[in-house]
Image (cartoon, rainbow, N blue to C red; front, side):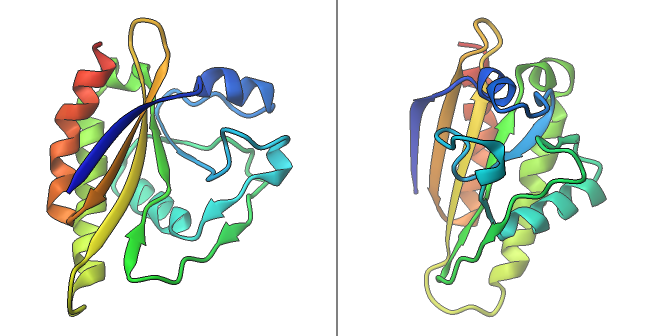
Length: 164
């Protein structure tokens, strides 16, 4: 299991620049959010649709960057690992509803566990989470790669980053 923390662009600023809704809860970021020229060029991992449905079904507070009339095209992943879409967690959500992060990661963990049932060999999950810090609203990216059981440990990492 590896967890790497790096600086990330300001999601608030970037969303505004692209004419997107600025997320105040959890959002799923397109794979090319940090460098795309226009929001019409967004691309999303195919797993994003599943994660959105899971979150909505389980009442996880979720914001869309794009209006309902716009959708980013999906990229299909054909490998033996589960690649999650990049999640954004806003500072306001972390202040108002810290339990939502635990619920979101638990929902993901349960889904991925079911997804891998009956699959032989090593089961690897790749997950990026962008966390907005409370103080200066800057963002850090947590890149996780490992077993599904390690996802739960990310809640503490998220809280730590948000309070730096």
